[in-house]
Length: 135
Image 1 (cartoon, rainbow, N blue to C red):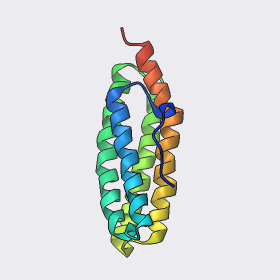
Image 2 (cartoon, rainbow, N blue to C red):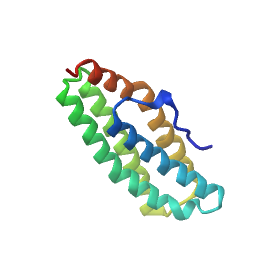
Image 3 (tube, helix red, strand yellow):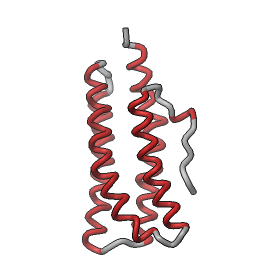
Image 4 (tube, helix red, strand yellow):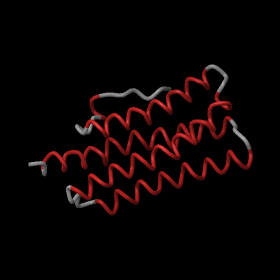
């Protein structure tokens, strides 16, 4: 099942929203490859992309949070690190055992769902804080 971008995922920050769309696109591209029987071939590429891109994206989000003195910055940064660790764990499994359908499922469950839930629960709060503190 593909993840659909909707207005409820909008943070109101163009840079963050654009980067979120890229993350969701990467997951959807993997799911599409799976539906075509090409999931194993795409998983390593997707996980490598997520590993590097999320570090860049989270870094940008954290710079904004610091700039606007986001009060829950410490916890938000911990959420990001938890995600980075999960992606790294998946990447290590691929390196050790090769790609598998099990890992594709893990990416879909742990990564795709995490991204959507994080945007809806946490990133919208950050964006609201930034909007309310922009002069």
